[in-house]
Length: 122
Image (spheres, helix red, strand yellow):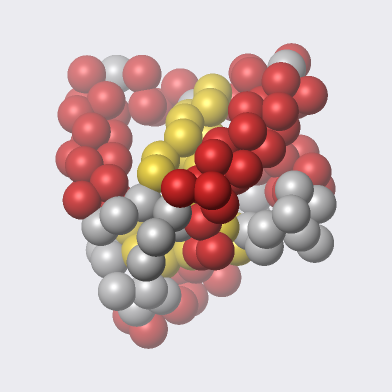
């Protein structure tokens, strides 16, 4: 289910070409800065998620302009439903939120991580 070998090169390319908001968030969450290890551009099923904290089964997605069209929102719903049905929590932030409200984004993540650590059973 995780990191399908067929997607290896695509994941590698995505990690090497982060958008600026992805780079900013990565700098804030890497090296267990929020108490859990995040992976970037992590494969789950047929999807590659922006950030994933396996310890608490938390997916963080950053949404740019393409996500706000009807088509983009429909695709995001299918993706989110799959991830949630697989036992994960999906949190979405806009690129603008990361760039303009990073402290609030991080506080939200810290709260969700704490909640997941308390309530998650495998």
